[in-house]
Amino acid sequence: MKVTGLWLNNPATQQVMSMLAGGGFQAFAVGGCVRNALLKIAVNDVDIATNAHPEQVIALAKNIGLKTVPTGIEHGTITIVC
Image (cartoon, rainbow, N blue to C red):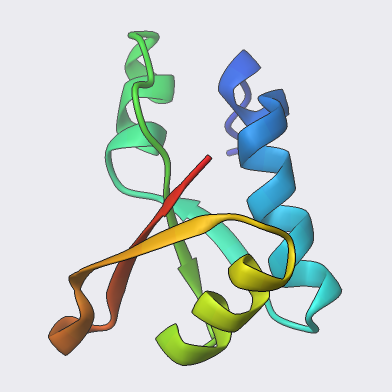
């Protein structure tokens, strides 16, 4: 099943996905955004799973001027503020 929705075309979502792909990494939308899209309810934030390590994501984000927050760095989770 392919998930669709305006949130996938959101410039911020596209920027982060493109950033990861441009760095040679995979990126997949996961979690609540997928659930909400399937239920046809509002998507308020996007969780992305990637094969990049947090330090790599932080470096990529910094290179394009995005702020990162180590919200759960001990679990490999960071927040990118777009």
